[in-house]
Amino acid sequence: AQTVTQSQPEMSVQEAETVTLSCTYDTSESNYYLFWYKQPPSRQMILVIRQEAYKQQNATENRFSVNFQKAAKSFSLKISDSQLGDTAMYFCAFMKARSYNTDKLIFGTGTRLQVFP
Amino acid sequence: GAGVSQSPSNKVTEKGKDVELRCDPISGHTALYWYRQRLGQGLEFLIYFQGNSAPDKSGLPSDRFSAERTGESVSTLTIQRTQQEDSAVYLCASSSEPIVSYEQYFGPGTRLTVT
Image (tube, rainbow over all chains, first blue to last red; front, side, top):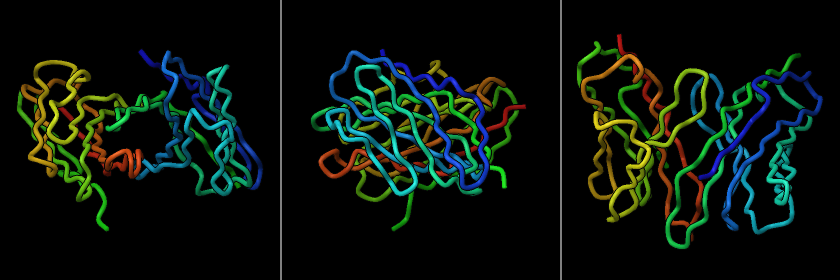
């Protein structure tokens, strides 16, 4: 079975600074996807960034980037130039790769990020 | 286009009553997922529908929980004889075929409170 661990229940950062959220996972699968989702107080889950396990290059989306270490089973999220709107719960998630179908997401327990002015 | 919608947004029910939660996926999406999010926790998988395949019910916590999906459209999650531990936000997500995208798009959720 797959598990996802987020060891930082809460983090805070000052506006314009950089913060890194940690995530580790455990799996015996060789091909899979990893995601970071953001959940603001509105409850809406928003995909921040995704990474295919077969790709060595770390994914980047504007101010968001990941450090994917496949051997260490680590998938951290770096937020640069933090903005007040980044305040939210952040969830790391794992999904097995299947040939013809998608699969369920396995989530970590989340990290609550507070950005201070 | 329209995203995933869920109704009701909030539901308060008395212990022992049955409830039905509805999810309307994005048109054309073949896969539909239900997740549960207890207060302050991550999302737990409940059930997954993929096209005409038998649903993956491996996450349902008890036989009080069931779900149906009509073709590739609306889905209902039913909880019978609700208990206080069923209080949570129930989130629905849909996705298209993986050759197109493996991203899951989430609805706004239904907050269920069992009193």
